[in-house]
Length: 393
Ligand code: PLP
Image 1 (cartoon, rainbow, N blue to C red):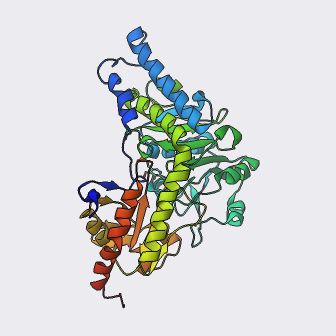
Image 2 (image 1 turned 90 degrees about the vertical axis):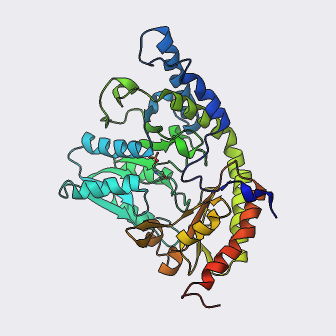
Image 3 (image 1 turned 120 degrees about the vertical axis):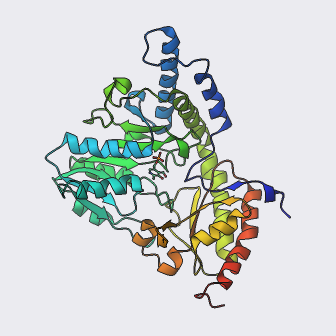
């Protein structure tokens, strides 16, 4: 019997991640001892301003850009909206947006609103993906037009971990004089990046996916890119985003970015090995299990596997009995279980899309945890299949 029976086995890091101890430690002072307003003129506020400046440099170091290209926001969703709406306001004569069919709701819903709430003033092209979740570059090239204000393509998909060729896509947009935004909420801290070498104009990140607190995000705005603020108010963030800064959390974000830079090698080494061991073990020990997503162009921490003929939500409930945390690719909406738009866009068959589970690891996972999951999953799936009218042994 594993010693893990009473502890939480957390494999849902693409949903949110544990705030690292070093991050918490760096934040504490800014709740009590140094609580000044960073915009104040006196030293008591000034030291707080310096703390968020230091954090800005730590974020910039991780992204490979300069601190003045970093604007703090409240979350990844706000960063996504800010980038896309800024482009549309900067170039009001342009009415076309290019995105994909597999974006996070932060971009997906905004684009739907752009079409519907504006009485179709804007046109949105949603690029198709193939069965491995990859884009067709010819379709992309053909979609770029003089009317395109911005392209918004995620760097890595939150459900499958599939990595998109944003470097190349940004270059192609730039050649046509079109702005390029990438939602890198899942990619930052998991794969190396150096924005100074790329044609990306806007990049979104979110603190809570990389072991910083929830409620802080960043919008990278390349130097020289036209920008119109989304949240207006005071002159914080050099007039780019109003509102008194979430100081302690931003200090935490800086620490988390410094940690992430230190952990990149481990993320792409030990974490990748753990993920591969988990993936290979599940695919070999459970019949009719299939991998969703590209085999190699994928984040090192993510695997999305469909267990055919069972419901993802039922699998999660059984996993919960052992305190194993992961996500399913279906959402229970108004009594019906709808498979995710990502898996539908990939053409994953109905019987498989319903039984998909995403495991997303972090540097805090261990081999013992992977073995525990590998020990429990075959029996969970077998017991559920016994109750399934579709399963024939
Ligand atoms: N974009 C992607 C790809 C995400 O995975 C998420 C969160 O799951 C978001 C945006 C939204 O980030 P936030 O929760 O900080 O608003």
